[in-house]
Image (cartoon, rainbow, N blue to C red; front, side, top):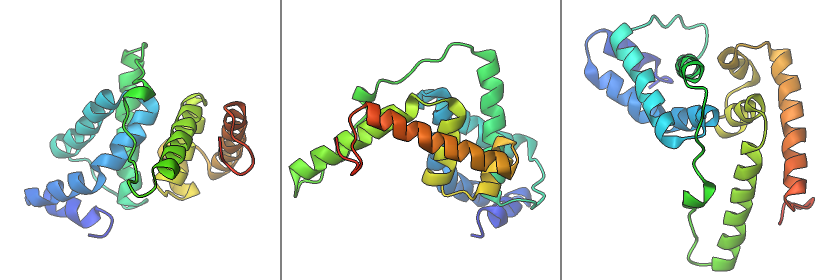
Length: 185
């Protein structure tokens, strides 16, 4: 599969397996990205489904000006922005309800790592929305700066500045929550 494009073309030609491949490949990453907007995993799941429904029902044309993944995430972002305009109040899923994986071979190390992940997660959610988005797109989803610029509807220069400020703000938040220079609590 060449980044989803061939699967989408097959779907448009009538092969429903193409859409299934797209959903399987991109569902989790897209949902986590949309969660950075709404901060509610259940709402993010619904918005992810709405994104795939958009592809199935409206069948928008993929021009190939960007990667398929970039195009798909931009559609998801647009759907989420529409949702946020309609719903001014957001509910936040408490971090305590999220589970973290524990490595049974070294419980102490796993505990420290889970505490670090929790602290980073909490610090990320205290950042401005744009900072969370750019950090998520580039570091968690592996988009290039130009792809992140397309998704966020900004110039590449704006993304570079935004990323610099986001990293600086995240570092400041982490220091406030007790991280030292080595990244430990």
